[in-house]
Amino acid sequence: MTATQTSAQPRTLRLNAKDNLIVAVDALAVGQSANGVTASARIPRGHKMATAKIAKGAPVTKFGQIIGFATEDILPGAHIHTHNCAFAAFERDYAYGVDARAVNVLPLAQQATFQGFRRENGKVGTRNYIGVVTSVNCSATAARFIAEEVNRSGMLADYPNVDGVIPLVHSTGCGIDYNGETFEVLKRTTWGYACNPNMAGVLVVGLGCEGFQIARMKEAYGIKESDTFRTMNIQDVGGTKKTIAAGVDAVRTMLQVGSKAKRETVPASELMLALQCGGSDGYSGITANVALGVAADILVKNGGTAVLSETPEIYGAEHLLTRRAISRQVGEKLVGIIKWWEDYTARARMSMDNNPSPGNKAGGLTTILEKSLGAAAKGGSTPLNAVYHYAEPITAKGFVFMDTPGYDPVSATGQVAGGCNILAFTTGRGSAYGCKPTPSLKLATNSDVYQRMIDDMDINCGDIVDGAPIDAKGEEIFQTLLRVASGERTKSELLGYGDAEYVPWQIGATM
Image (cartoon, rainbow, N blue to C red; front, side, top):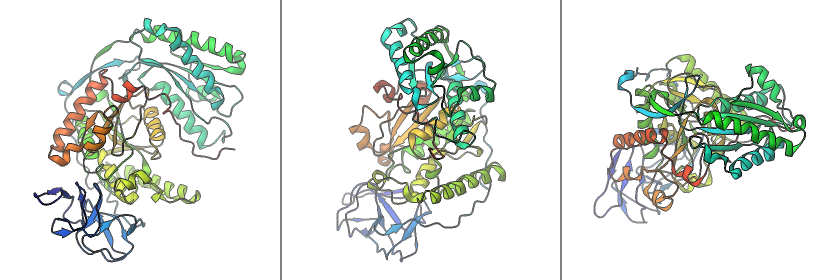
């Protein structure tokens, strides 16, 4: 990445010598010159200007990769965006494993540490919540009433080690294929949240007659009820009021158990980091995503796990991940998931290029290919050790991938169900997001959104375009993650975000 600036020129970036464009760090007015090219149209910040003639049908390149194809002849100085650059499928060389390089993981005694909650099963939490989880939308109100009654009663004051009681409700659970993929995904998600190490206890509340039967989930996993895991159905208990009373009693018991948990010094290898981006812009793949990738590499070197997701947002960049796969089998599993998404969107009469969003495009991203190349940077540079389906338990260490939609709440829900105990979220447009029970660290891709949304943003990565070293920013992110894992509150936590962001993936038809 090379930057250009003189006293008379706006700042621009050429990200790769192969590129036929530059990115505007500062807006260019008509007639202004940069990199030896004069702008023939206004080029907003984060947007692209052609530096060479691109013939109609020829590839447009950024990061040294194809981000789209010219829909008309594009002359030097032209603004490259949706009016003259479009998505099209093309063959990619998956080159399985050619770039996979072994990571020298630090010995345990040399790993960074944080203060976490060690659970009986050996896993480590960064938070200590009680969750009231629903099996079906029909029990959502009762679950909320249970949490509200506990919070209103003041009993939490007696248990300062517990971070809170959160209702985790959703809009599905019935009218689904009881024996199909939708049931399996909801089953994995529900039990995954119950097992997440940030949970001190979980109460699952159902109605009783719904498609997603709690008893089937318990049977499938061999679950036995205890002081930290309880279930109940409104119809069996005898109605809403009785369910609320019974639920509050169950939570009271869980609070007594959860309050005994104490933070202790544990190695960073116990961290499982969810990598997310939302409200991306033209800076995302240049600043915050790249810096987060550096932090992910540091975590992997310390023996931890970094989880990249959002399959539609690595589409077109998946060949960069398959090159890092530790085996052909791992790489082919990722490619198989990509093909599933192509079929999934075709059946819905959609295109993979329906992502990026209008906000992404306003921020300078033109096609899904461009967005994905920037989004994949969050995954750093270490080998791809495993690929998981949505909400599957993550057991591998190092860098891994989980299949999820690109919609942030659904994606993060899958990662938390898989075991992620901390989350880093980059944003260029300014996403408002939290993720109870997992703390979410917000990374701004540009200084403007950081300053305008200072109450939501934790770290400014926009200063990278002003010369801040990317490696130093990655280390800053990593050290902040350790502090957050030890109990420091993120901006989204201070604002109270996280109760409404539990959104399990609804794959199948609603009947």
